Picture 1 (cartoon, rainbow, N blue to C red):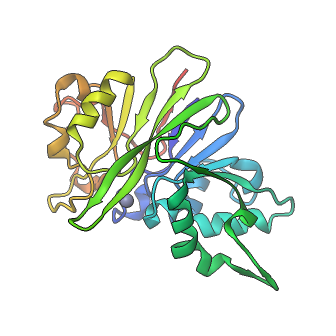
Picture 2: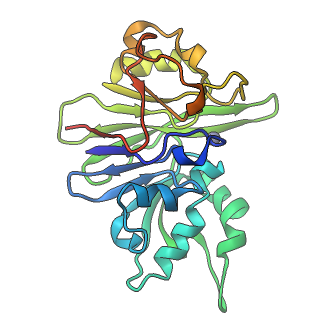
Length: 260
Ligand SMILES: [Zn+2]
């Protein structure tokens, strides 16, 4: 299995770094897009995907949560697969309440009407609604959802569903992708014991949004945890010195990791 970061930037970072979406390639060659932000048509093309042949290039998509740097490209993906010369529905995996919310509050406005037919989400995608701690199987890997608190207010918490991904056939430890989360020290300590690698979202700007773990918070983690940690979803103009602080480093746009 390979994971390519087609983007590494924060939601408001400069466009050349693209949104923090990833392309997972299974040993079979099939591809799963992990989040589809509003610049996916640019980042996918730069990653070598033929964006005029999406039904044959992307086999599945997983959505972690509903910010536009993670779902802003879904209308584009839906129309491009539906109106392709050989249309094929892409498999869509996501937590089930969030799937409903994505349709009702985001995609329905643009995707509901085509000619004389009222469309629903499953007209565009083969939907796989998941429970919040589910594990699903896809092409020899088993991703498990981890509910991460992304935006916490006294009234509400918006979660993002990170993934622990295990290779079915291999004894190797799984890897973990946080997607978007606030700093979760206890959870990271526990996850670190189980995995070989952690890809953690990381805010680097001086002004904090308090919806992502900040570099200065992650820096306080124990050395063995940081030694497994790659950082992404950053503001590239605010780069610090990750290696001297004990991290493996910042993921670069286009960087691909192989997990044998
Ligand atoms: Zn977010």
